[in-house]
Image (cartoon, rainbow, N blue to C red):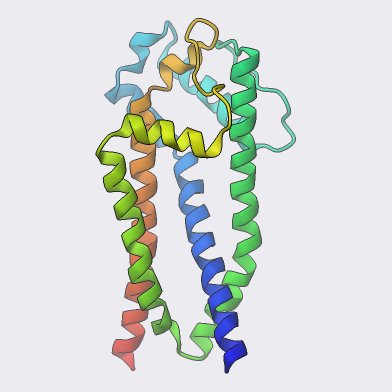
Length: 211
C-alpha cells in the first residue's frame, strides 16, 4: 500500500511536469500570437520589412531555437551581435531542456494515468490539482502588479548575465520583439496551464460522480 502511494506521488509529479512543459511548448510555438501582435502592436512601423518578410525572419529565429542540430542563428534581414547570439543560445538551451523534460516525463505520466483509470482512482487528482490551480493565479497577479519588474526578475532567475538587454543598434530584432509580446506570451502560458490543471480536477470529479 505504501509503495503504491509513493508510486502515485511520483506519477503525479511527472504528470504535473508533463502539463507544465506542454503549456510551455504550446506557448513558445504559438506563431499565431506573434502574427496577431504584428497587427495589434503595429510592429511593421518599427521595420522596413513587409509582414511576410518579418514572419519569415521570425520563423528562422524559431527554427534555430527549436532545432538542436542547428548551431548558428542566421536571419535574412536581422544582423545578430555576439552578445545577442549568446542570449539566443541560452534561450535555445532552455527550449531544449523543456522538450527534454516533456519527453522524459511523458511515459511515466501515461503509466500513472493508466494506473489511475484501471483502479478507478482518478478522483485522487482533485485535491493536488485544486492546489496547483492556485499557483499560476498567484504568479499572474504578481506579474500584473508590474510586468517590467516581473520580466527583469524572470531573466534574473534564468540568466546570470545581461546579454538579454539588447542594443537596437546592433540587434535590431529587439525592435520587433517588444515587451508587450512577451507579456501576451506569459498570459497565454498561464491560461493554458490553468485550463490543463482545471481539466484534471473536472476529470476527477466526473469519476466521483459516476461512482
